[in-house]
Amino acid sequence: MSRVYNFSAGPAMLPEEVLKEAAEEMTDYRGTGMSVMEMSHRSQAFASILNEAETDIRELMHIPENYKVLFLQGGVSLQFAMIPMNLMKNKVADYIVTGQWAKKAYQEAQKYGRVNKIASSEDKTFSYIPDCSDLSVSPDADYVYICENNTIYGTKFRELPDTKGKPLVADVSSCFLSEPVDVTKYGLIYGGVQKNIGPAGVVIVIIREDLITEDVLPGTPTMMQYKTHADAGSLYNTPPAYGIYICGKVFKWLKKQGGLEEIKKKNEKKAKLLYDYLDESCLFKGTVEKKDRSLMNVPFVTGNEELDAKFVKEAKEAGLENLKGHRSVGGMRASIYNAMPYEGVQALVDFMKKFEKENL
Ligand code: PMP
Image (cartoon, rainbow, N blue to C red; front, top):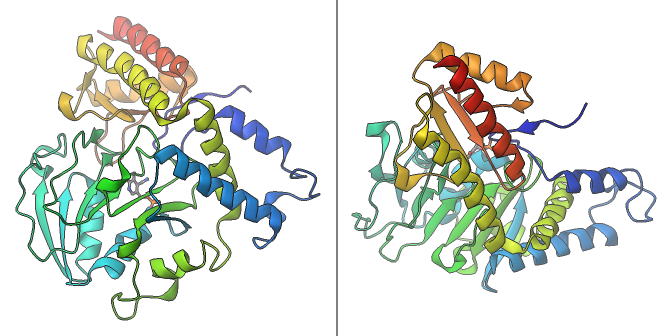
């Protein structure tokens, strides 16, 4: 059975080249006589894997010296607690709620302090990004929080909010390494790797050094303190070693493609193909305000639930998998992360055209 085009929102498609290379190294990693899964995380071989992964992501994102890169576990959702526990010195934080993931982070933070929702797009089912150019940021806010790309709804911040000098904290899970970023604009950037970078189980946190302190909320577990992991170079305890190894391979794959500038061009080309068709189709339509469209997650509907279900079923039969929208919104969603080739989006658009002819 050959591989399908997998439009899953995450865990998602990885570059075939990376999977093949990992398969070749599965039982004997470069003459060590063992798999990376079987090797001590204190071994020389693993130290090289971890160091190279960090060096490569630093190079890809141009991460300045005064930021630490941490490879952690616990999924994105653990960060919803870890962020306030570590950063809420004044016990005040401002959240911009643009989808379910931002909302979950906002709700979790309420356990730890006074949390203000300073902007939201919930009034229109999160189908747009609110104007964040002049928000009433709390004078004593420890940080301002965003989810930069909203996986479920398919919106992305094209411009970062004006945080009035407060550190910006961003969940970039579904747009990680999809285009260049200016790291200096953030206090903390983090994301799960299971969409654009690697297997579930690894979370990468890029955090400005001055935000890493011992002054955390009382009772914060040792494992949930950024300082613990920063001081130990992500080796405080056994890290998600195999996952980090795959992330490292994806970083090298990205470098080979020409880095984030080139990846952005490819992602724009893929997204344009799909959005242009959605804009001209008489059957399908996009659900998001055009100016806020994500390059990574593209939701669309026919307006008829039965027809949506028929589309998802027939697409699957044609080798186009996981096109069902998130269970909370219905319809369809095509996630077209870095590893989705242009040909995959072309195959989707061709199939949609055929479906439109047959069903209109
Ligand atoms: N944030 C975003 C933007 C997501 O898309 C997701 C879901 N994949 C999460 C957070 C939650 O991730 P996790 O399941 O790793 O907690």
